[in-house]
Amino acid sequence: MPSSRANYSIGVFIPLLAVALWVGSATTATSASDTQRAASPAPSKIEGPPPAAAPTLAVTQTGERVGDDTCLTCHEKEGQAYGKTAHARVQDPRSPAAAQGCETCHGPGKAHVDADGDKTKIKVFTALSPQQVSDTCVTCHNRQEHANWEGSAHNGRNLSCVTCHSVHAPRSEKAQLKKVSVTETCETCHRTEANKLHRSAHMPVREGKMECSSCHNPHGSNNVRLLRVGNTINETCVSCHTEKRGPFLWDHAPVRDNCTSCHDPHGSNNERLLVAKAPMLCQRCHVASRHPATIYDANQVLVSKSSRVVGRSCVNCHAQIHGSNHPSGVVFTR
Image (cartoon, rainbow, N blue to C red; front, side, top):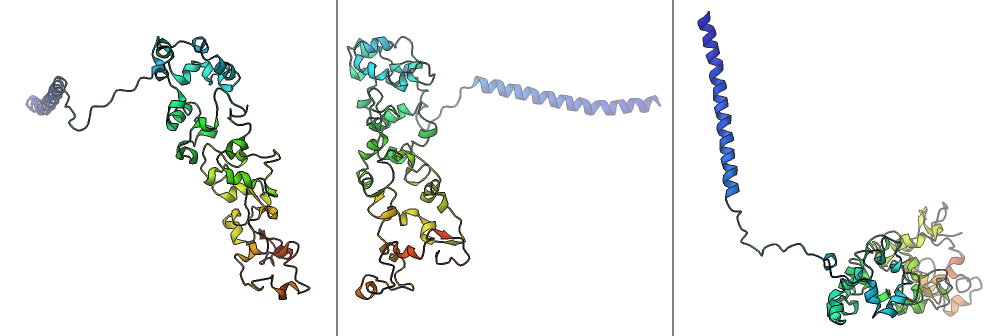
């Protein structure tokens, strides 16, 4: 009996001893490998230049700032106009005045002062490229209205923020524009659209009830034509003209496709901003459908019951031209 118990103990002890020796050897090998790896130099990369060090902004360096008082000794005129703008509101923690004042945008001025006003020693925006100017502005103006500036139509045409805005001497309190109003600012480039606003039928921009930015976001949008609302022209139009939204039981294909198929949103010499006078507008599509193609020939004008040459022309009968919900309104009649 003692002999069998001893044999059992030896049988259990030997496998445990083997496991312990194996674990010990693995640990020793791992430690040696780590030691060798730590002692050996890191392999150098052959392809490509070494990675550049992270850029250090000059504005973070100490001893290079001179403060606004030093700037105003020479730039007193600019300082007076700047003091009335939103950038000069010290109580607003997001304004340049609450940070480093003039040097927030123009960079440290010590080198500029020491060089007797050498303009190459400081950031002068008139000497920068449009992209460099905008890059400076969007360090702060990068949300809400300005979130889509990168890649927008105006950015793609090499315009910059200072093309429309003036930081030091704005003529408009709204958005610090170089012109008195938003419309005047847009008119400097968009002359065709500006001229349309002076036609007999026009959006109420001349009367001051709207402005270009009511429909367009000049800083960029996810819609076409820099439109503010939706993803299509129609979505922008029906945001005000809700009665034309639909859906309708009977849809008019041009209306569903694009409002500008029939209307010019900036202005027209035809009533209701139509791009052509009725019935020619309708006949661009409806050439010869149940009615003669030409209604101004002698035979048609002399017909006593012809109402397509007077009044509302085609819409005398087809009044629900944007769409109809009546079961019998397939031809958009009353």
